[in-house]
Length: 101
Image 1: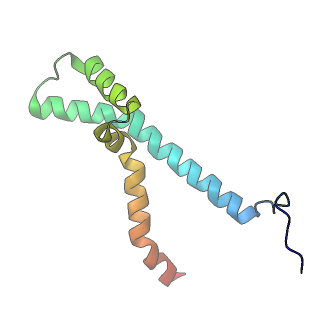
Image 2 (image 1 turned 30 degrees about the horizontal axis):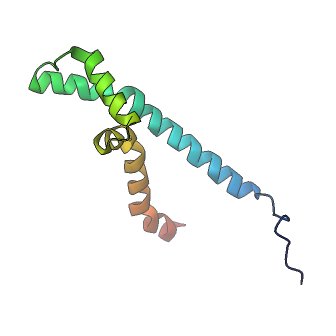
């Protein structure tokens, strides 16, 4: 039996490639929801319950996206939270899927 050289790498098998594509699609959908739609929902819910944000929607979005670019934990949690929630749900339901399959 020969050991593969460092440069001899096996190509991805089709099942692994499909899994990576599915995960990237899931991330893209969840991140798009979190980055595009969720800030508007948060703003309008906050304006309805707490009153208007000083400066309005443009100021809110500017602050939120600026904090996201500066990697502020609160902005990261809000904007990437939908993907994190999906990962958490999948992790918690994994034993159920394995038992069923």
